Structures are given as structure tokens and as C-alpha cells.
Length: 187
Image (cartoon, rainbow, N blue to C red):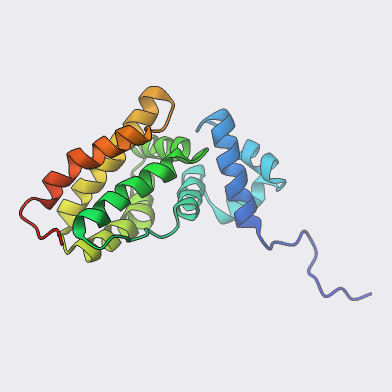
């Protein structure tokens, strides 16, 4: 008997299943959730995960990339584009498991230079480059914008266990935009 399918489980959709299980598990158990717990929640073997992602940090980075998707560069003006970017990342960090995963992988990166490199290359750089192009700003200013916004959002999450409330996100927009739009055309 000749089977058209190779032996083993079909692999279509494994990344999506693992990413969903990662966010659910991290949301339920915190960032300390093990790869073994994530694999169990995904219904896959731990080796399936480690074949794709050599470390938990790399799994989390790819999971975050999947959860974030592309930066929606919306707005008719520089101010609107920056405000919408702040609201977008605040909403993403507020999604179940995303803020926990984001804060946890950043915390791990403090003492892991290889993970810092992965975070910079795969997570930060694509968003920085998109903002640089859209805002016509140098890398150092865009990185500072990202630091201020993401740092503030993750700090709130770490200190309260909750994402930043909408009225506080609005206040963050009002505080940050004057600095980053001073001396620039806003229209």
C-alpha cells in the first residue's frame, strides 16, 4: 500500500497552533511557562517546537511577530501616524498573553546577548525601519520613540499586571507627540 502522505502527523498549521498555545499558556501561567507546557497545550511534541525554535526566546520572538503582524502605517499626517502607532502597540500589548510574552522575553534578553541580537534583528528592526521610512527620521530618534512608548507600556504591565487603560494611552500620546513632532512638519 502506497501512501501519498509522508509518515507522521501533518505539519500544516503547526506554527499557528504553537503560537496560539504559546500565548494561551503564557497568559495563564506567566512567562515562566515551560516549552513542555506550551507543547502540551499545542498538542505537539516538545521536539517539534525545538526543531523550529532552538530556544524559548526564539519561539516567543516569532510568536510576537505573528501576533503583531505588520505595523499599520495609518494617518494623513505625521502626528496621526505617530498617534496611531502608539495606540496600535498599546492594543497589541493588551492582547491576552502578548504583554506577558513581550515583557518576559525582554527580561530574559537583559542577560542573554544572543537573544538581544535576535530581538533587535527580527523584532525591533523591521518596525524601526518602517517608522523611519514613514517619518523620514534617523534611526536614533525612531529607536528613542520606540523605547519611550514600548518601555512605558511594558512598565505599566509589569507594575500592575494589566495593560495601560485607554485614557492613559491617550495621555501617553499627548505627552510623547510634542517631543517627536517639534520642529517637524505635522501635515
